[in-house]
Length: 113
Length: 115
Image (tube, rainbow over all chains, first blue to last red; front, top):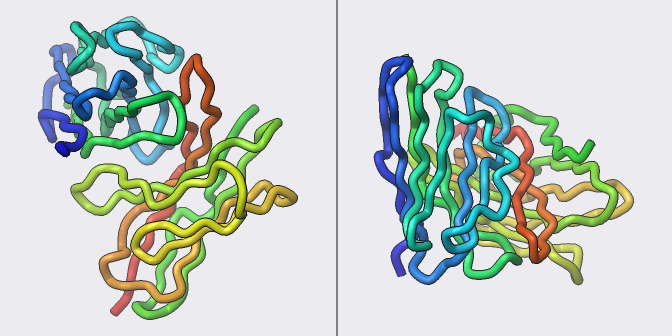
């Protein structure tokens, strides 16, 4: 079984540019989550999809961040325009049900310069 | 406010020595508890989890953790550390319900293993 796949693994962009991160969950997993860890801080929840619907987006920092999950399969997280404080590692995770934990991807390291 | 605390930012341990990583949480009820590990260049891997029942939980790679309700703690242990255990370790808590199950993480503990 393939795991949760994220790409790119690294991205370096200039302030003001747009970046799109992609997450492919484990096949059949209805639940998909985005988390991020900025510069030495805690890993923080961003949002949760159930299929294509946003179940909880309470962790999205501001309206420069847009997450989508069309068709309930892969998800994208777009940052537009990127700011320096957006630098960090963005993790995606998926689960079959809403209980018992989930599987994380390897993360995308975003650097905004 | 709900929180998860990992008091030790860095721990250095000799190979073959024992390891204990501390985790304390502050919640109104007993949450579900997890330990994840992130090795260099890798994603977050689940080591073990506690939902209910036996308070001593066995995980992968020889790790175990003990839930102590009276202390609101869920400390991770390994009797004999291997060089490959050098990584960053995260404690996390969650409340799973139909509406969602986001995790709250501690700040992480970076473990260095001396030969």
